[in-house]
Image (cartoon, rainbow, N blue to C red; front, side):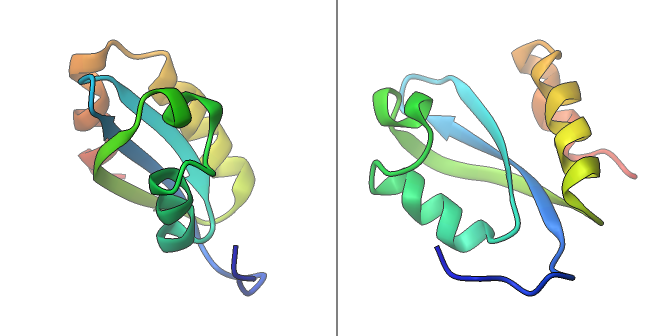
Length: 89
């Protein structure tokens, strides 16, 4: 993946997979990370559940904040994940 500046925001992103499942992850280079998922070089989960579309992303100031948000969204039932992603901060 391409290098990003140290001050680049981190993103929590949500991918809808072809089987209808949702995958949540974090990155500081959303374009490159999504492309990696599409090419089968992303997470193990998206290699076995190919991506259909990027549902959306939410920026965070740093990796720690994005990681906390990732943990939080993974605790939610599927029907609440998209709402969490788009909720006001």
